[in-house]
View 1 (cartoon, one colour):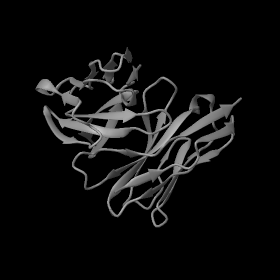
View 2: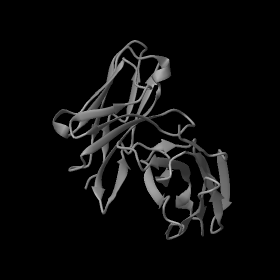
View 3: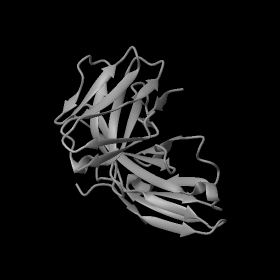
View 4: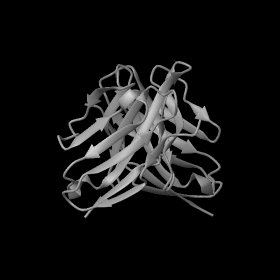
Length: 115
Length: 116
């Protein structure tokens, strides 16, 4: 169990550019979540996958955002035509049921700064 | 819609003392879970403690315990014998039992400073 990993850890980009983040969940975790955390706030749910199926998307996830989880393993979150308001920490979490309970394990996050 | 509120942006405690972090929530559901997560600076968030709403007994995990008041929709975290390593941002979170997604709804967080 190596934990949830996210790459890159930091990303600085110019407004209008596209960016892509990657999340590698804990192996055998069938659920994967993306959250966004702005400065001084708690994380907000963006979307989640069960295996390779994206089953729910928050209204926060505008048309410029897309997420994939091919083959139910790692996931990518792409933001097209970035805006300054996209600056935030993007957190990934994975989970599976163990002992009748599903705990989410979080990665260290990708901090995005849009100039 | 469910909401979680943490009204204390910052708290401080002397090492070895006890501190209580407050959290209130709003929901119309009867089945749900409540959590406290710890987010150390530049490190990933970890689960500290959880409480199932159907359980009357307050959860405890070593130096961490909760005071769950279901009628008042209050869920506070008590940290006893505070240690320097407890310094972090603490988030209260809610998960509806009826939720198929298992998504968490977080409060705004409380930054805990531990003074030596």
